Every structure is written in C-alpha cells, then in structure tokens.
Length: 209
Image (cartoon, rainbow, N blue to C red; front, side):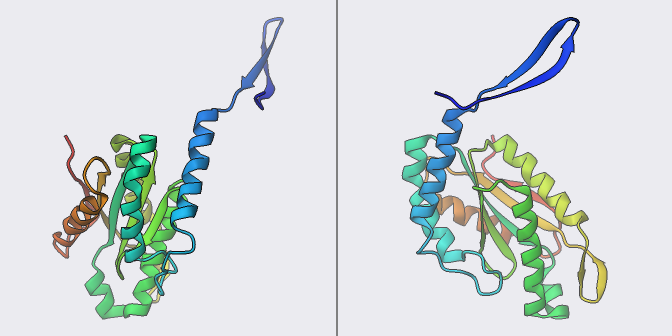
C-alpha cells in the first residue's frame, strides 16, 4: 500500500486529465534514517556556543568523526564547509565582541533559510560557522554556497546605528569521502585562516577535479 495523491488537471479536448503523485519511499526512508542518526549522535551530547546558541566547535568535530561509518553504510554524499564573516577584526575594533556576535547569528540565520531542515550549522569561532550539507553533490553544493554568499551580501540589517548594514562571507568547502572527516574539517578551516583579512565574498572549492 502506498499513499498517493490524485489531482485533476486542465482537460485536453474531450479527455479528462489527472495527475498521480507517488512519493519516493526510498528518499523518505533515507531522510528518516538521517534524522535518527543525527538525533542519536548529537542530541544530549552537544555543547552550545554561548553567543549564538549553536552547537560549538568541539561538537562539530566530534559529530564529523562519527559520520564516516554512516557515509560508508548509506553511500550518502556529505559536504562540509567553513563560512567566515569578513572584516571581523575591523568590526570587532569598532563595535565590540558582543555586537559582532549578531553578525555571526545573522549569517547563521541566512544559512538556515537557505539550507534544508536536515542540514546542520555550527559555531566554530566568534566569526566562523561550520556547515554540513547532506545528500548533495559537489556541483549542487557550489550552487547553494554561491546563492548563500549573495543572499548574505544583499540582505541589509540594522547594526551599529545603521539601518542598511551588510556583510560578506568567504566560504571553503569539500566533500567528505574516504579520508577522515577530521582532515576535511582541518583543511577547510586552514583555507579560511589563510585568506587575507581584506578578502571578501570568496568561494574556495577544495580538491575540485
């Protein structure tokens, strides 16, 4: 038995037309298994960043280390990325640490409204986020991250006494694969740390063929 829906379409000539929608049971099961894996391995053991209330750097690294067996068992494609709020030192000197946390929260909120429900966002530092995107190809991730960069840049907010304040972000990303997830994590972090402080709105795709 399969739950499906039938809806009537515009008729063609004298023939009645209907649309039969059959859900993808494999996709539904895979999504359910992913949610169960995340709940089992994250809820109850995660530590939250005080400023953003997001799972912190330690939690992100520990969760990534648990993903390898899950990826091997399900063949799911997973992308990891590090997102940097640009010009952080200048903003920190001008507005202070507490105010700058709002910029990181703004970037995180843009992530959540761009990504799907099962994708994950972590606070890695006071100006960087970690992101895990599940069941996605390298090509699709590139599209998503480009969309995110422009969304953040074009979304003006009230900040520092201005009504149209905007920020940019630099993003490094790579696929999780045969190597350890910790190596991907560190490589993405190092790519962001190696950027010039004045670099803005860059997308760094690691290990692209």
